[in-house]
Image (cartoon, rainbow over all chains, first blue to last red; front, top):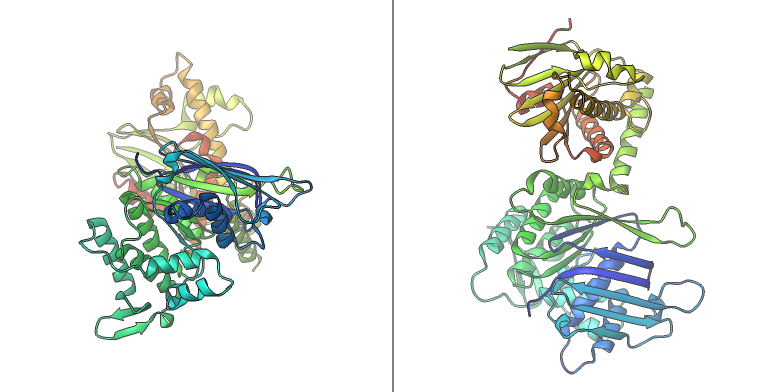
Length: 352
Length: 181
């Protein structure tokens, strides 16, 4: 049985979602939408399921581990609080289908605390390695973070803990493939140096200038350093599933062409990407690639706009629109805001 | 060599490029224009099985006033992007009508434009007003192009907004010279 990537999710009464279905691309999925429409929730749900399957061993029950993962990743007071808040008693139902045709369905009620009910076929365990890069960076605080997280109740989502563990994996033996080498070289050129790890701490090493502690590096560069090391240590490889929440945060727009190229190359390498963004530049760059440069590689790039149903203001219903070209999105708050800014600027310009 | 004048600019087309001014054709003047408010784009071009619908807008002598502002903003009835989108809609209708009329041949020889697998480009050749800076011109092109793309997504065509320099880079065989004083 071949491993699968994510093909589809169906959510019912789960967090913000009443009843939502989303089909995904096996290459690049770009999620956009206003704050509070569930972009991160969608990615966290998918990640929780993938990570549970990646991490699960025979000593733990799947139902309990998945519940624990959802609590760790979303950090509700208790699991049942992830059921959509509305009058009456409800169950949250989530169903995920992989490209290998296997499915996993799980559900829980408002009173659930430690376990979910699951239904899945045997093949669902063949799921690719998942990585979640949250909005804030963690590479500057890796030392002792895992031990702290394991021993104390600290208010960090589990995505940080998971990423921390992935970053601290030792470098992989053997040569990287040509795409990985190319990506590492590109990233090295961007930050003009290398990233090394010593005793759980990360350093930036610049030629002839020695080591710089990661905390002294600009935040935008720390994100580049994170992806650099995940590629270098073999965590992010062919067939991985990468979730990256707002990659543009703390990055100057000048860095956007580089991370766009990174996404394209990772997708060509076989990584399935889920990117949530509020960045005009990132959306435009990926849109330009899809419109003008995708003839040869024929990547399936899907722009997924999430928005509240304007006809059902009281119910907070989330609707989904999915297109292969940015211009085809009817609901695109990023471009709408650019146009609004442009029109306002024209208004002021002509007032002089 | 074919010379056509539009918006105070002379366009010199080489012989191997097939071009017409849509609103100069008999079919357009005698039939299509009878539908009130009908408009058309300026040039219809066939070049190696690529079709171009070109609208020329020259704001070189435009004044900095409310009318010009409305042209460059989006979302109002006078905006350039709306005008061009409507002209494209009318032009496609005109080509379809001409194709269905047996006597007509001037426009209907471009009937392949209606086929689904044909490369079709809509170009707004925009000469901006002199009072905008270079950066403002770029913002204008992006904003109007995004808006025009949305308005023409039904057409499945590539949409470009270009100034004369960009246009010459894209079609170096078409020479543009200003005729305005």
